Image (tube, rainbow, N blue to C red):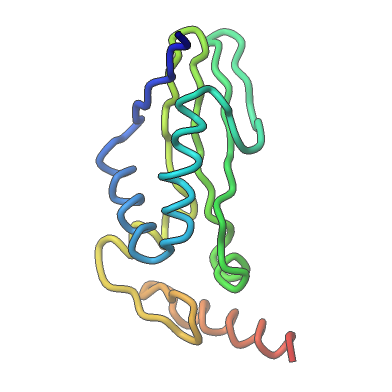
Length: 139
């Protein structure tokens, strides 16, 4: 019987906050992550792009792009899961979900939307400008 990989966290509390925020604001990405990507990672199918390897610690760092709305992606960036794989110990170390700033802000307080895109309260003018600019370019 094949032994599965085990999930561990670099900072479990922060990761769970980002995960809950992802569930609240982007359900499609959350469902893909929970029901497709996590089981594949546990089986040893490492998804995403290999971004770094550390031969001394025998680790590989992966970046997995989650499904994202096009407008959200252009304003805040793609939603990505960053994780490390310790192949000798059969551990998948979950690091963070990007973009950290908007997801952690969404966990702390309710975010508003503008034309269907989440807007940060810290730099709402910048986000609204980007959204308006992208809408003008599309017309």
